[in-house]
Structure formats: C-alpha cells, structure tokens
Amino acid sequence: MPKETGRKVIASNRRARHDYSILDIYEAGVVLVGTEVKSLRAGKASLADAFATVDDGEVYLRGLHIPEYEHGTWTNHEARRTRKLLLHRGEIEKLIGKTKESGLSLVPLSLYFKDGKVKVELALAKGRKAYDKRQAIARRDAQREMSRAMGRALKGKYR
Image 1 (tube, rainbow, N blue to C red):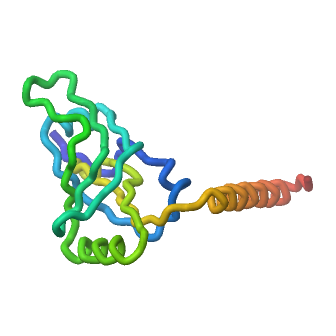
Image 2 (cartoon, helix red, strand yellow; image 1 turned 60 degrees about the vertical axis):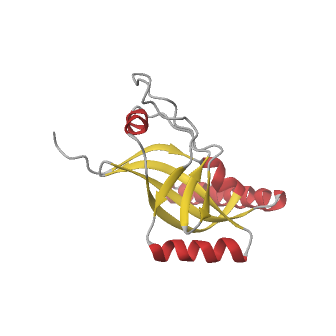
C-alpha cells in the first residue's frame, strides 16, 4: 500500500476565527487509539466545543468529539475523552508562559491528516468582544466590496 502524502482536512472550527483574535498558530500531533483513527478516516469529528489546556507541563485537548467507530467492538473509545497533544518542549514552555501571564486561550482551528498522521492546528488566541466582532465583519465586507470594484474596473465595467 502506498504511503499517504499531503493534507486532508477532517474538521475545522470556523467559529473560532470569528470569536477569537488569532495571535499564534502551532501544529501538534494527537495521541489516539485505533478506533479513533478509523472513525476520523470516515470523516467524523467535531471541534465545536474543543479547547486545549496545559497541565503539569503537558498539553491536552478537551471536548473534541470523535464518535465511536461503528464497526468497533468492546475496545471502542469514549467519544469525548481527553487527548494528549504532542509538541516540542520549547513550544510547551512558550504556551505555559503566554496562557498564565494574560487571558489567552488555546483553541483548535482544524483537525487533519498530514502524511498519514493526525494533526491539530492549535491557535493561541484572545477572546473578542461583541463590538470587535462587528468591526471585523464590517472590515471584511468593505475589503470584499473593494476587491469586487477593482475586478469590475479591470474588466472595463465601471460600476
């Protein structure tokens, strides 16, 4: 069987980019059991309530929902168990410092296969207030309208 290459997204947390200002992004491996990987290969996962914590010098992903593997037996996994993340020691030390000093959170942005291994894109993020969210939406809409106007101008259609 040929080795898998490339990146295949399993689940993404689009809400996180709306609710948080992303400051830094890390890629981490996830410690999983066999039935979890089989369930992920079927494309089933939800990052909706997921978050990461740093406990005793290790990073854990909590609230990630991977449904039980339908062809599994008594060895099936729990759907919302706590999963350990694999990061370099230096990255963990940075995360410990940043999350303790200020009100920053660790939020998973996406879960994907990279060269056959499950990875999670973890963001160091700061929560947005309601008015910040409205400003971000207005800025994005204005940017979209400007790019549409530029496209029309380049095609020779003014207005």
